[in-house]
Amino acid sequence: MENVKDGDEAIKDVVVLVIVKFEKYWVEYIVVLAFDATLDPRMKLETLAFLFEKNYPLTRELKFRKIKENYISFFFWIY
Image (cartoon, rainbow, N blue to C red):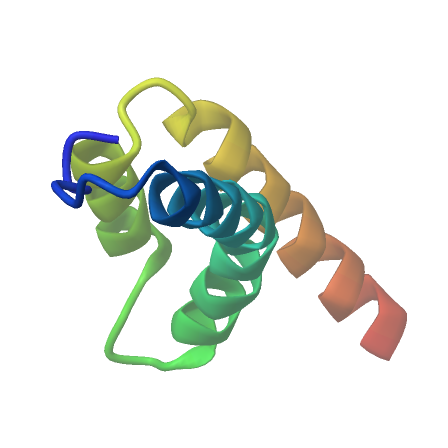
C-alpha cells in the first residue's frame, strides 16, 4: 500500500487486511447509503448517477442499476 510508510512488515500486513475487508463491506454499504439518499427529495437519481460517475467510473453502471432495482423492488413491495 502506498499510504503505509512504516518499516514494520507486520503492520503493513495488518493494514492491507483491514483495507481489503473495509472495501469488501463498503461496496455493499454504498448501495444502502445511495438508496437512502434517493429517498431524500433534495437528492435525485441523476445526482446519484453523477456522483457514481465521478467516484466509481469503472463500476458506476453496475452500482446504479443495483440501486434502481432496489428502488423498484421497494416500491412494489409497499403496494
